[in-house]
Length: 203
Image 1 (cartoon, rainbow, N blue to C red):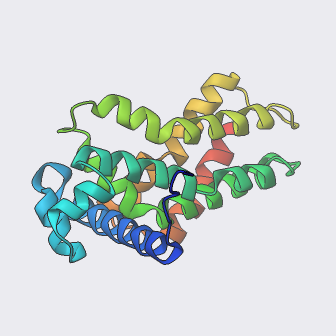
Image 2 (cartoon, rainbow, N blue to C red):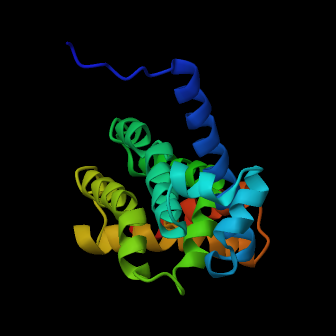
């Protein structure tokens, strides 16, 4: 007798995917608003309108949820496409303008995700590793931009590493947050000033 094959319902899979998406979205907002340490699985379940056991079955523990948020944030950042466009630029000014705009759009679009991660770091059991995983591709992209700048005339007066470090200082998530969140700047103003600062310093 042939073995019975389990039936997989496309509608059930779609429903499960929507539930996971809803849980992750509500968890991200709660982590960003209250902080990771002050949110329970029951809070996430209530916000998503599901039972706590559904949260565990769908996405796992609170730590699992945060890991999924990090992974989704990285994949949704669009940095690969932005870097492809940046590497086609042939002047330092156009490279820095593309970098300022690209990192601005990433930080603005992923602001809630970044806040959820940032507020989790002090209380997460492995916060340092979490931050490194969340920002590794971001740092690599800025290193790539620094190397590209050194191929264009006139090259920066700093080493490639120092140039990458400065790009992280200006265009990394902390730089954007300092101006927009802590000091109330608009995203437009922050983009203009950070770009002008980088261009003046690297000339």
